[in-house]
Length: 109
Length: 119
Image (cartoon, rainbow over all chains, first blue to last red):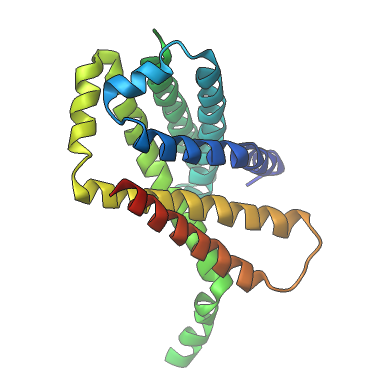
């Protein structure tokens, strides 16, 4: 892992620490206050604040997980560094795309 | 030869090595889970009924236990990551093994409380 990736990995970890606390609190709240699709979508649809929060979370987790996957591929797979980087970038971008699609699905009115 | 190999693998019995392994495996587990999580939420694009169908499937006790495991993975990865950030950025101090064990213990407690909350 080069210095730039190291800094991104740590910076996204720091950014996500409070987000994880909020996310876990949301999970605890949601499981006690209606876990039907109608309940969930009633709370999320049209919510710009939650949309922005989870967009930032998805961006951070996509970068963080992509770099982590690259490190694992580098150390535990036969891929060379270049191919590990390509595979990790594809994973990170796919994760970001799926995450933003999920946010759109539950936030867009 | 066998004794030499055993000595070479001795570090794998160290608690901090196990903590690093747990951090990596929990991250890998979350990386496998996240695309599925996003795909599930994306079901709402096709209408409320598809998401509702999945949510009712997730009422099964085995799925709830799986959710408890995921909560453990999230908590242990987050707490292990905070420990790592502290090791890298704060002055060194003794007690690293205790902190690693505490991270795993607190994560297990969070998962158990979550399971009790769900069931």
